[in-house]
Amino acid sequence: MAVVALSKHVPVQEARRTEYSSFSVTPISPHIGAEIRGVDLSQPVGGQLLADIRQAWADWMVLVFRDQRLDREAHKAFGRHFGRLHVHPMHHNRPDQDPEILVVKTTAKSAYTAGEGWHADVTCDAVPPMGSMLYITETPECGGGDTLFANMYMACEMLSPAMRGFMEGLDAVHDGALPYVGNYKSVPPEGGYPRHVHPVITRHPDTGRQVLYVNSGFTSHVEGLQRWESRALLDMAFGLLQREPKLHCRVRWEPNTLTFWDNRCTQHQAVWDYYPYSRYGERVSIVGEDAPAR
Ligand code: SIN
Image: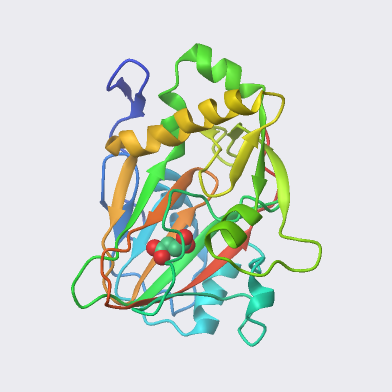
């Protein structure tokens, strides 16, 4: 695959694949995100179809499957092809709900919408989810309610070699209390929410590519730096996502769309631009195999 330089520090793979044995994909943006129609995830998924989904996921990071009709069991069964299902750290607040399903519901009465800020899912865990599958069944009548995704390989490649070299040696703390208590005002479980240290720059276990792995949802500080140095470094990293739309794709939901993102090399942000209308979906996440590593 040819590599071109879009700008000084942005080597980008050209001509990503769109044809697979079982389906074609339509890119949402040149560098992240692809849409798939004509695949029915309620039917058994295996063999070549599963191999193609894995390959397309590695190529595009965010796969958008349209026109799905999934009940909870089918949603979970699709998730289990990729690993064990994750139980969210806030589950103790909703003991009556299925532990493997995270309800993502926003109405006029909601105090917040989940994920309204750039983040990767649950990076406070020792082994954060490798991926998440959000199945949206109700979209706001007024439109909107999109989700933005960012390519964190590309964010890493945009750093100068000197800055990347410096960051490669650093670790950062990811603290569940930041979003779950600070933003969502939830009551922590006994012993508190998870809090773990991960490298600032990780290596994706499947592709071997480096990823900028700090996010404004969970990363509280960088270890071994003065607090003010840590703040400046994190603000620089978080600012990259705000400043660079070329890192992004935007998923426009239709009812019955399932979006499957690679949580190890992307971040995402939900857009709450539809008050007082409602949006409803359910998320299944898959536990990663290994802790993030250099
Ligand atoms: C999430 O952070 O998983 C929610 C994303 C969304 O609702 O669009």
